[in-house]
Structure formats: C-alpha cells, structure tokens
Image 1 (cartoon, protein in one colour):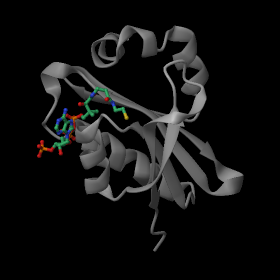
Image 2 (cartoon, rainbow, N blue to C red):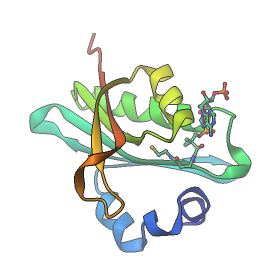
Image 3 (cartoon, protein in one colour):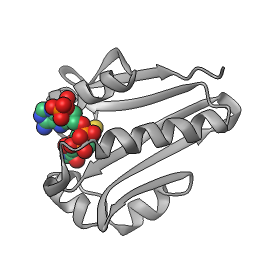
Length: 137
Ligand SMILES: CC(C)(COP(=O)(O)OP(=O)(O)OC[C@H]1O[C@@H](n2cnc3c(N)ncnc32)[C@H](O)[C@@H]1OP(=O)(O)O)[C@@H](O)C(=O)NCCC(=O)NCCS
C-alpha cells in the first residue's frame, strides 16, 4: 500500500478492497531486502488473453530494472498458462512507462479516450492500449 500511495495520485489510488479484488490471478512482488515493487495481472484462460492491471515501483528503487523484471516474470507466467496475448492500458502522459513497455515488446494498438471522471469521451484522448503477442515456442 505504501508503494501504491507513493506511485499514484490520491484520486487514482486503490484501497485494500481494490487490491483484494484484483489480486486473484497474478500478483508479483519484487523484494530486495524490502518490498520495492509489485505487479497485478488478470487472465482469461479461455480467451488466451491476459491484462497487466497495475505496476508500481517505490520511488527510491526506480530506474534499476525492477518494473522490467516484474513484467518479464508476468510474461513468463502467462506463457506457462498458454496465454498468447497480453494487454496493458497506459496513460499517454506516462512517456517513461510507455518506453518501458515498448522495450519489453509491447506495441501501441490504439488510444482510448477518457475524460476526468474516467468516463469515455471523444474529446480527451488519454490512454494507449498496448499489446504484446507471446511466442509460445
Ligand atoms: C513506471 C515504473 C513502474 C517504472 O519502474 P522502474 O522499476 O523504474 O522501471 P525499470 O527500471 O524497469 O525501467 C526503467 C526504464 O523505463 C523507462 N522509464 C520508466 N519510468 C520513467 C520515467 N518516469 N521517465 C523516463 N523514463 C522512464 C525508461 O526507459 C527507463 O529506462 P532507463 O532506466 O534505461 O532510462 C515506475 O516509474 C512507477 O512506479 N511509476 C509510478 C506508477 C506508474 O506510473 N505505473 C505504470 C502505470 S501504467
């Protein structure tokens, strides 16, 4: 919860209930002495599809490859579950995160318009849907 609080603005933070609901499928924690980051993902086995819902790294531990390792671990787990396509939705303002996802193999598919109330709107494009095909070989 501390990593969450330090990583997202108050209006976008998840509470304990949100975490408990989301953590049912994949929950990875990076521990280096103490918890420095986490990743939460959801899988639809029947559809061969996974979605990375949240990645965050403690501000004091960023830029050292923690998020990259978390994402690579999730992709390894997806591969073992025969999941072939992984999606992540990223705020367009998060240029750094977009670069990070592109580096591990995600590609921008389309932009998703959202307004400030998180409802769909045609006016403010604010998210990219990014996807990655997992090589099963
Ligand atoms: C995005 C985030 C998870 C990256 O974690 P991290 O452990 O620092 O990432 P890594 O060290 O694995 O990768 C770093 C690379 O990502 C990119 N990157 C990540 N954040 C960046 C930023 N704020 N500015 C510029 N580049 C950034 C760079 O390409 C960087 O490569 P470099 O270190 O060679 O310059 C972390 O900054 C974070 O928790 N941010 C707040 C929460 C958030 O935005 N989560 C993503 C929601 S989609």
